[in-house]
Picture 1 (tube, rainbow, N blue to C red):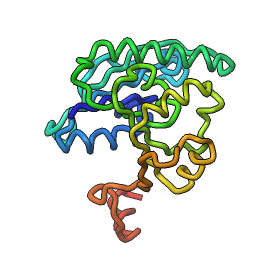
Picture 2: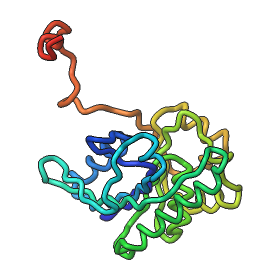
Picture 3: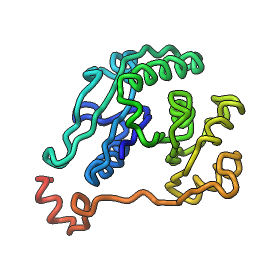
Amino acid sequence: MHICFIVEGYPTSKDPFMPFIKNTVAEMAKQGIKCSVIAPQSITRALSHKVPLRSQHWIDRIDNNKAQVEVHQPMYLTLSGKAGKVNRELFFKAAQSAYNKIRTRDVDAMYAHFWHMGIVASRIDSSKPLFVACGESKIGVREQYSDIQINRMLNQLRGAIYVSSKSYEEAVSLGLQRENSPYIVLPNGYNSFQFNRVDKRVARSALNW
């Protein structure tokens, strides 16, 4: 199984941007799924936030190299906030160029994190099954894209993952979750090996607080 993830960002130790993306992908990679991530990086963001630009193609080694994720991060320029449509088109072109470098015939499914990334994934490759994870605080895809583009994505959609009933209900109200279309409500979890309840005094002592 080979899944291509279309996302807004992917974290590193020096720039922990959107860490939940890595957690999701890493768990799939541990299960033996081949994971290719496309996360275009904004040159403007790197300069304004003073974070280093990454290699445009690198391997993220997971769990002491027991699994690995192939990460594609083509560079693109972003303009002011008022140039939203232009920025979205530049993001798409960067993502498309990265996808063309993957052995696309081997890709079994497209996975988009957030509805607006679903539009990008659908535009990149409309022939593959598409899955969208919805966890936005507010779903804004209808404010960004036309009904034609949204309907094209929904026709391709094979399943949606919601992190809460609130996300599901909002998607229904916006006409994104169609009747009889597969979905699951799967609340965000945590790694109990990394996060666990301990006595406050013990924790503070361990941290030298």
